[in-house]
Amino acid sequence: MNAPAIQGQVVAIHGIVKVIDAQGHERILKAGDIIQPGEHVVLLDGATLTVSRAGGDSITVDGPRDLALTDETLTPQSTDKSEAAVAKLAPEAQQVLAALENGQDPLAQLDSAAAGLNAGGATDEGSHSFVRLVRISETLNSLSLDNSATTDVLVPTVQGETFSTAPAQAAAAGTTPISVSIENISATNNATPTIHGTGIPGLTVVVSNAAGTVIGSAVVGSDGNWQLTPSSKLPDGTDTLIATSTNAAGSSASATGTAIIDTTPPATPTVTITEHNDPNGVIGAGDLVNGKVEATVKLDAADLAKNGSATIVVNDGGHTTTLVVHSDGSVTGADGTVSGSYSNGTVTISMTPPAQDAAVTITATQTDAVGNTSGQGKDSGTLDTTAPSAPTVVIATDANHDGYINKAEQGSATTDTVNIGLPADA
Image (tube, rainbow, N blue to C red):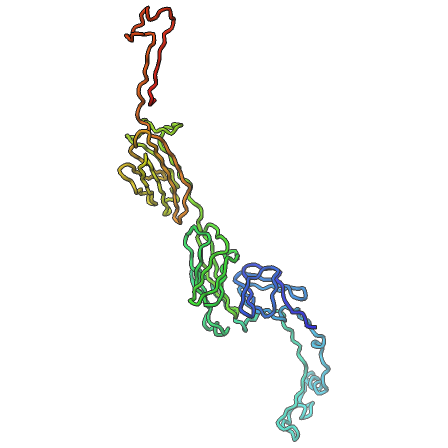
């Protein structure tokens, strides 16, 4: 019956720890995973790994480090009693020890052959005899982290750079130098941006965030470039990205970059046409300022100053004007009918009144530096600056309309009838 394969189980893990099997395939370890003898374990800086062994005890290793777990590492050491026993000394050895204890010449107590004084006797030409005094028992530590066979290569991590093992270290490991780089991602409203970098063709690059969460991996192409799209959305703000690549010998390289994500739009602008709070939205003659229709648009001044902009569309009776407010406060797009100016977050719009009863509509949106656009602010009103026609007033009792009511017209009536007619445009 074959002996069961010796293996270790991950009990606890902190940070990023990878395993590379004999075929060069790598995986990220998590609690509960099994590690087979002969697999390379790579711990990044700050990582800690605890593995339970066959006997029930455990071993803990701290990073940065790479090592190979063997049967001896994964098996608790047991000592054979016969190995620790002291064998009975031969008579010659006892004589030598007794002579040493008494301060005598130990060689004088032996015959010449035993002492090795007559080398090259008649029957043992060219041979020597010797006395073994004692067998030394040695104890080996069951966990040896001497990485001379795999060359533990420590690579510093510096933002925005490419890291590679030194040629001398690579030569000792029997592999070509390893390196990896990752590009910074400038401010964007894309929460799953494409991440780019360079590395050694054929090797896998694993990208994780500062918390150690893996967000994706890619194989370096023959041109030395790699790219990937995160498996989930990156959070808003500045996030640290760590790219790591490991070769079959267990040598690792890492690089750090940043990603700035902004998916939050500016606040919706507030648009107000001066109507003196008319509940029906009528823009009357009393609402005009210096003969012009006025309106205001409230913007997010802080967002505008950070390379933002705002777009205001004015439609006055079918004539459309588009004003653009820039981050420096300038306003472009004015024509002979509509103009605008900006100050401290407020755009003031002035327009020539359109035709009587024409509708005036103003909409506004604001966009930040990375392209997030706010909701649309809107207001509208109807121009009515012409007074209605005068009403008509007729006193019915004044039959001849001479302005007098005589006795005949009054008759016996005690009241007079007055008819008031309202004009059609009232």
